[in-house]
Amino acid sequence: MRWRYQLQSCNMVRAGVPERVAMTISGHKTRSVFERYNIVDEKDLQLAAERQHAYLESRMGTKPGTIVDLDKKRSQPNVG
Image (cartoon, rainbow, N blue to C red; front, side):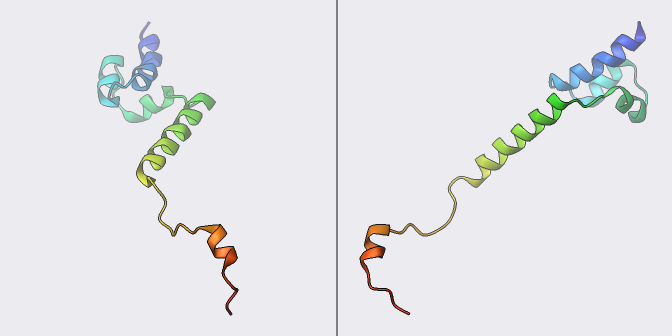
């Protein structure tokens, strides 16, 4: 029965419970044993990539640069 709690600790972490709390509830005494049950699957990797992408997008805002009116630029003679 104890192994069920150990397996559930991974679900607790995915639900937002801090790892230390999940370890205490599940009875894991060391991080190495906790990590043994904390199996990463394809869904975890996809979610991590989506979260990172959303974070980076929120931090970037607008990209710095110069806005150019292309019609005006095309009508100017080419110098150089």
